[in-house]
Length: 544
Image 1 (cartoon, rainbow, N blue to C red):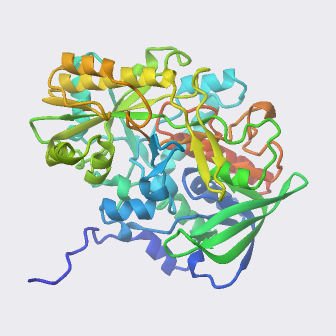
Image 2: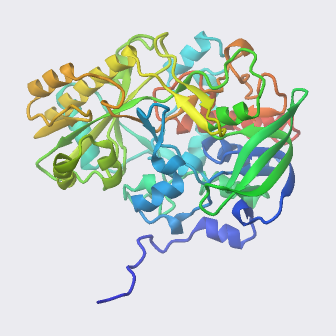
Image 3: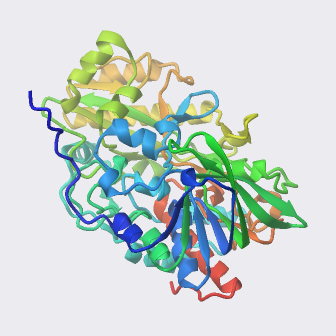
């Protein structure tokens, strides 16, 4: 028997993180600390995802000293082996199994340097104009499409966000073909990639550094400019006094990134930027007992509740191969008023065995039979646009007894109505594309071989938590922007209404969900806020 190990999957490409570390970047893995530490900087940024990464680069280039604090590890392309069993525990919150309090919604969020940008599927949309108009109508000024356009353009240039010109893989093209036969318009995605190898494993970290995530763009630029990075450090509490943050207390975590080691890090800064993402950012402010006179903190947290419909085709689909998302349809967002019945965006997610098997309903022989046909499987998902109607107040972030976050997100009749309509739409598209059977992802659903049979079954399905599989990779809100402190946590310039040296720069700022994959919205808004903050702190603002 040949006992030699298999060759690495990762191509032998330059690793910008390893090159930077060798060049002397100031990076500290808190799990290696043996004594307490005190750090002083101009700006402490908590979280290294879309908001934190953009802010770090802009504030560093403005000449300010910056510390970037990340709870997860620093991983890079040499660690990305395109294997789910390795990627989910290393790169995601709760090993890609974070859930709402009732376990009814599974939530995918990143937890490593680069945050969710390291593991997302690269889909890049500007904030829809209808969403921005709704925000303005409901008390947020200065966030119209014209005001944000230069910031979106700036980040699109910075992160190489362009239309994806490569032909879609079969998984995505089935959405296009089925929708076309039904007269439903579709469009091609824009993606933040450069020299992409079209592998399809974006959700496990890009092994070729093609994905222009914070991990390979803004964070290396900030570190090369003198910023500091602290990893495996949990931001525990902001110590507050007289309307200001005095310092931030962090706990070092062990090498697994789970248990505190007993070492603490005290961070003193002129200004603090919270960029932990929706769920984690409200939780930090709750642990810190931040002022909340109007009970807005953690409220109106939105998910784009997402439902899935699978199908089997005669031909191989191989949904794991090729750009993960390259075709979408906004038809069911655009045909109804934004504050009417809940609308939904259609996309085709990548298919990988672990994620697919844990999402599909059933068990035993039936589940095994579906997995044996995995190469022929196709999936559509519908992102429900929550937060625009009185019946869609979203969820609430609170704390468990140990201080960890808890998200309650009730699924009500308003949402279930959208779920049923979305399942019907997806099934009809899949049959129009030639599916031999369609499998709505619901515990009581079967595989249906005709559209009339599927339609009748979907109309009869009892839509209840846990029976209907609901997932989400988009968490927004909880620290909402608002001109009036009675309606939000943060003012239009990103500064907390009651804490003068604390800002929030991440998706928790959104007053509603946005009805699109949120990374570009966070990039553009964070760039604008960080530039304004740099100027107020005496640095040089970024030019949009």
